[in-house]
Length: 218
Image (cartoon, rainbow, N blue to C red; front, top):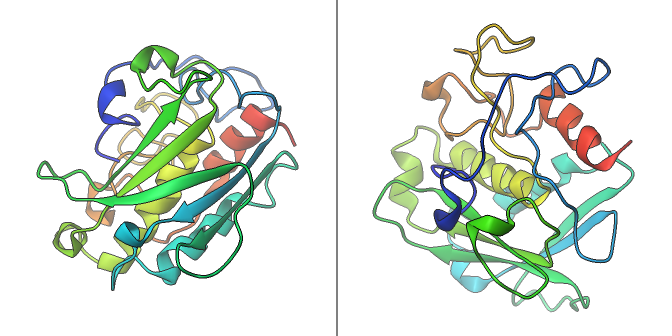
């Protein structure tokens, strides 16, 4: 969440305050990535949470929050299972891995193009897969306030990136941007409530839902 979407993609998305449509008045240029997933117009993603991303803090209470992205668009369905749970995998499984960062990063999402390449030039193309990294150092979440809440927000935020949602633009003059110039959205960058830019609960908001439906349809 400290980075645009992944380490290699910082600075790759130009944001503006242009309203894309009257119906989706809360969606502005740059708040969704272009392209879909290779071979489909839907985002039906199953995430395998590796053992490296399972800790005392990063547990089922964090990953079950993925369900907040469901029941918004008929073309979006996301689910997860824990590695070692014994659940069978499907042919198209995304991965959640644990990783320690030394720069304050709590999570990042890495997309891959049809050829399996990871690079910033493909952020607006069709993706074949994504990989989410969660910081598995509990101290990083403790520093942000409520550790569980911060971890939940981090995961929901990164799943939002995997659904091709970008960080909202900051512009106090834009409709709905009433939190220090940002909209009330889980896709804001920054996990802790002290930023004044994220919801005080690990849930998607009207702005998040509007962006998701703009991207994937009702």
